[in-house]
Length: 442
Image: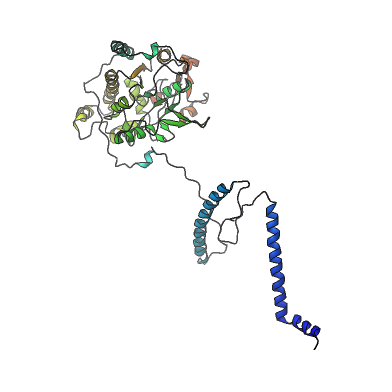
């Protein structure tokens, strides 16, 4: 039999046909791979693919174009980690799906979870309701008949002169100074006593001014933790990243630095004021006061803050230590609405800060009254910031919704006539009522 005949028989056999197909398929596969590699060499874009027939793994070849090798490695490692987690999850889902008698569709890729926003360090979410109230104290002298802010400032300035201390507002403003007062400036106003007004005033004057919270969380919580740890009061919360310049800036002014949970007010709790004097002996203490009865009306209509002062802070004096026995007895004897109690509480707080200012002459102290018609001019005199920076501020979104003709919650007092000042009867009945975060609004 000839060789030709033998070859024909071999090719016509089933085994010959099978081997020929395998050889052709292998050659085609190799050519396809080489062609893909050649195309990849000239490609500048990559596709992000998810295989609908796989377990949901991301294509490892897919990534954004024109990244550095190091970035690619880091991102690819992160992507592989995420891929493995979602592959395991989808395999489990697929198994559950297959075991279901009613399942008809193939399992699909689980959706990527939304990135959770990191909780700031000084956030009430890091605490529990079991946090014990700290000890606090106020002067105890019955009903308080306080001199006006102007009268006290005269006595304070006279004492500073007697001790040979500089009076900052009597000195010219330096070329690089935004204000005449030493920094930092710490506002010790109670809530509903122009905390936001002060913040907007100093912000208008060119300072980095913060109200309630920094980007690290609540100022009050930061100060509380520092007091317990023996650190400077503003350690860890004395800087701010500007949204405009993206630069880290030192904070010049803070206000609304109290919180009901975990409760802390540096001007009330023991050791708070002493820590300020120890770590910032040349700082400025700012206090804006108002009529105590008007303040109580505002506080009564602003969330549950007075209730929290009683239940969470123990500001009714119901603590197991002698310093608050006087105030607890005053609470028991006060009528049901407790107006008299809170009025005395407010005035005692003012007296405590005045006593503190007198005992620490290295500090600079400024006090003005919110209802004073010349308040804006006095603020300019003490600080060097124009009086037009004093704002008429009201509680936020709700107030704006109720007054559609305004464009913001703070308006310049100089640009508002007395006839157009808005009455806010639900929160104290006077136009000077400003915003304050109760600790339960955010």
